[in-house]
Length: 87
Image (cartoon, rainbow, N blue to C red; front, side, top):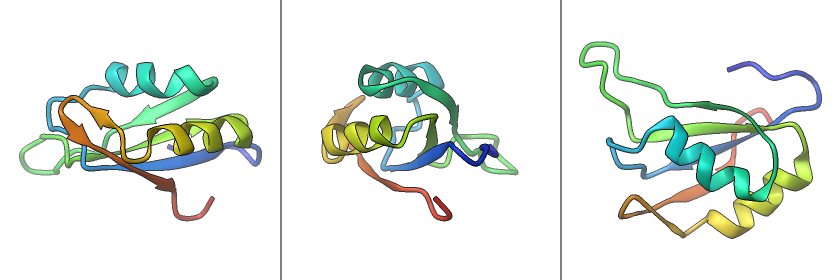
């Protein structure tokens, strides 16, 4: 997931392996326009690795989402939301 110069990404940890892209998009889009969601998968098993990146077009929307969702429950897990490295 590569963004343009005006995009900002959040790193979301402690996701359930059953949490899908639409689950994440639904939770984060309540706080602004989500441009993209990326869930890395294990090379060998093809299973999700328990974290994701959520990309926003607007930094304020990303800040609102991080403030609201960091420490919240998503699919029975307490998630951690932080700025993605490089943003």
